[in-house]
Image (cartoon, rainbow, N blue to C red; front, side, top):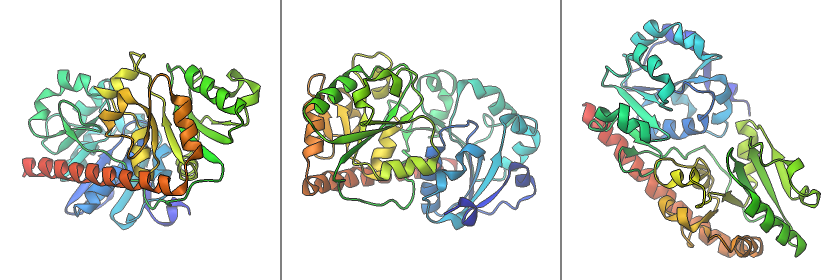
Length: 354
């Protein structure tokens, strides 16, 4: 299904001549990435009775491929952020008409753009932080109005986790176990490769779909005998991403407690893989040092430590459908809990303005 058949999609310049309906939200994503968050944020506002307009880069159009309820959504597409920067005065006047403008990725490098769009002066701007540290330095006054949102349960800010992607298919286990994983720069995958080699040598049948752009983790950098197990896909559309996740059984979240950078993902950052776990109800494989932060445990996922990833992957490969459905059922309970907590936090933000 092509998104053009069911979502109203226009050039961002058409926003200047469009009627802004009462009870409307504008979601603005200034980057070429993070569009996996757009369906989830849109879903929350639609459930609360709002109309949703999105101002996003064209890279994010097919992030709504699975989305339901699109009659309340309009997409306004820009090809280059420079086009937005040239129209900030005019765009600022339009943004003033919305109940709220949600800045989906608040980046330190974009502060001049936010100033020109008058985000810092109006009380209808909500800032989403994917990394909370600099928010505490620069945007601290907005915490008081519940206008700082975070994807995880941080020390400050309101957690609103956008993990809805649309109508997903809840499947039974594949006859050949399939893992999904996103690779990330500056991360070591030696332990995973070592574990997969041991499983291969012991004749276990499985495969791992890898998306992402890590230059340290590529087909040419792993043993040739593992090429049939690791399926590398460097850059995929959201349509392909959704299909790959739906067809997988488990999601590997390879955070390493020995990595200084990875340890930020239990304090000031949230891994995007967690949104996929919740949105597609795919049990995670995650290190115990991180699992508590994401409310993952042995009832809804598979937890490993620095020594037993082999045993945990073996357990996943040998799992039967009954055991798998129990994990999925418990994941659904967690998803529902996070959804309700997020809705409550959005209502607090709305009430604060009113």
